[in-house]
Length: 257
Image 1 (cartoon, rainbow, N blue to C red):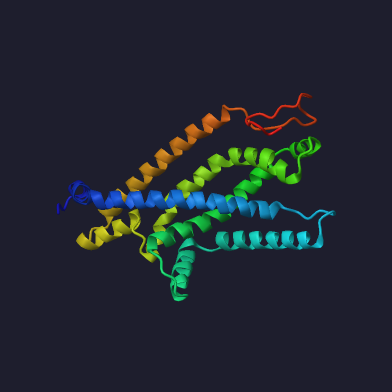
Image 2: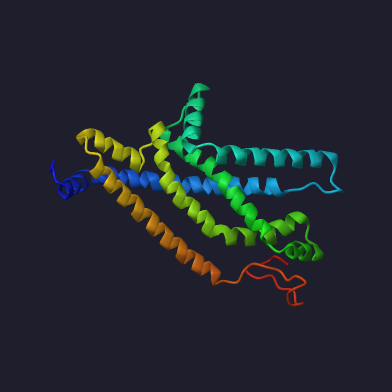
């Protein structure tokens, strides 16, 4: 292998590009699936956290809502308050200790998903709280139940408004998957580390790795910016409140009357 920097970089790229590429693909798959799983779980957690008991609720309903509040808050605090590397080790080896069997790749997706859920839950909760309270009041005045108003009016607006923030979580996950090397997930960082053990060349390998991560994050950021611009140019899903026009319109959806 060449001893000069640029020669070594070229040698590593031309001889190990397949290993780098495989690491990139693994990183992107885990990040994407983990973000999608995190969105689904996070949506449920955010609803559990904002659901409040009402005077006309039954005792059983109040108890379940309270349990949901406690569970969601505890979940969010735990996964936001501990490092993902520790979570990965705890969950991966804990599952094996219980007699379970799964690959490091599957475990990596699961860990990223449940970790991301804690952050997305707070993002969606903030998005819901940012919606004008008059939207709910207007929906209820049209005869919708609380559930219908949340499903047809509040959540569509909240989710649409926080899509850029959720996209940023994907970018964070692209970088954070590097900690999954602790459970031998063959992502970009793990494969880069494997290459260093072949030639005992560290700076050049991690220089290439950092450039690859930078390219991925820059491209992802650009795509998110285009998506945000496209969403901002469309009509928001909303219903009129006391501060809007008197005519009843529901924008951005069909069959939500």
